[in-house]
Image 1 (cartoon, rainbow, N blue to C red):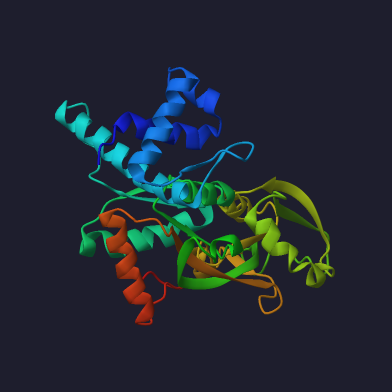
Image 2 (image 1 turned 90 degrees about the vertical axis):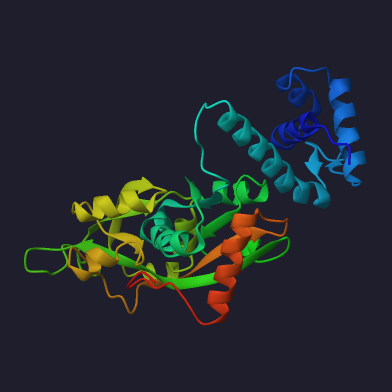
Length: 305
């Protein structure tokens, strides 16, 4: 196969900008030359990669799959050149994983601790909002996405493994006597609210009918569970938090659930991949987790596995 790496870089730029003229400008070449490069790449690959009928332009199914391949090839070449020139010593082909703040600690840390030693793999982690992490997976900017149950990712071209489960629980800080600082069922209570466009906000919306009895008023808003946790620990209000993130605080009584039997939102912890070929290291991890899940293993909110 006669394939110029510059064509791959052009293709990656076009995939990011979704516009021929802007991509050509960013690559510092004329638009006609840029277009020839993309057509030459398509000819070399033997597939149409760009859907030119849409506005903005988009990738064909083959283009979305090839996007992962192109990113891996260009990334490996760049890392190799840096090593040869002594510029830096980058991680050797790390598994690129994206996750939201709410699962970065301790869930992701537990997963890394369990797998990195036994599999001899390295990780490069991006902590992103759920929607941005989904985009990163779709565009091939990460190998795997560790997240909650996302309906759009439970169908082709994506695959997923359920590696754990838990609950979002409504929690309060405590008095010295260990009882909840707030009681939203009887008194006006400050609520730490999630931003309307966040995954957590959409999850809580499903619980709205049972929230009518709560006497709350918003005092803070953020899309980050970690900020809600810190604010709740400071006694600034009650918050919905995933039990996986606050297992230590629940255990030592810094936070207590408010009527947990009534106010709980079950969730799944899933790891997602695109159907495009993974790097060797990412595929090793995927196969390891697939075997573990099929053997009955699950991560829990109570203790790392």
